[in-house]
Length: 153
Image 1 (spheres, rainbow, N blue to C red):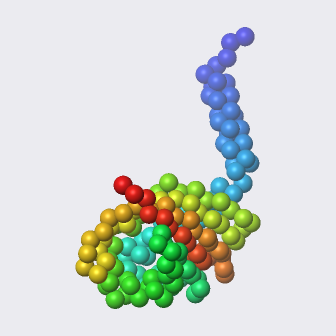
Image 2 (cartoon, one colour):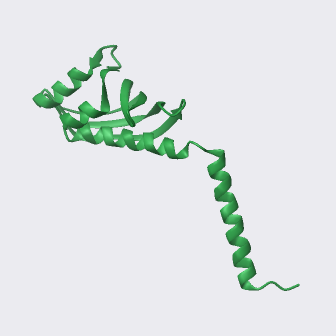
Image 3 (cartoon, helix red, strand yellow):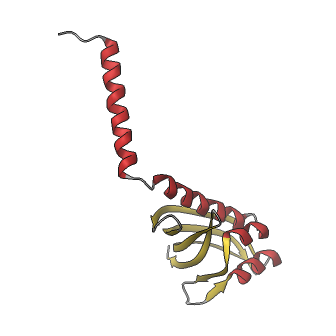
């Protein structure tokens, strides 16, 4: 039995659609994971641009960031550092991120962040491993807590 090139194209298309359908059914939260990872990228931009209004939107009022040295920074601390110019970022980029979802309104994101800029007029350039806890309130993601550990070069 001979098959036409149209039969082969149709069969190939059906297989491709079946593979795509399986991928989406195996990862039902893929869209939500992408939403969370986009939120992380947007949060980086807020720091990079020293955009206080954006930071107020992305950080919960009770946000805390635990640093490698054990110090804890609050939302107010982060915003005040940027507003005052004490800290300036030339690079603030998350990468190698993995999102873990817990329902539709809680996520934990693991990844690395490269930051480069100045703090108190002194240059810095470092990479940290981070763990962020996100919650979804009123239809938008916010960063509730973070922890960073410096990665030595």
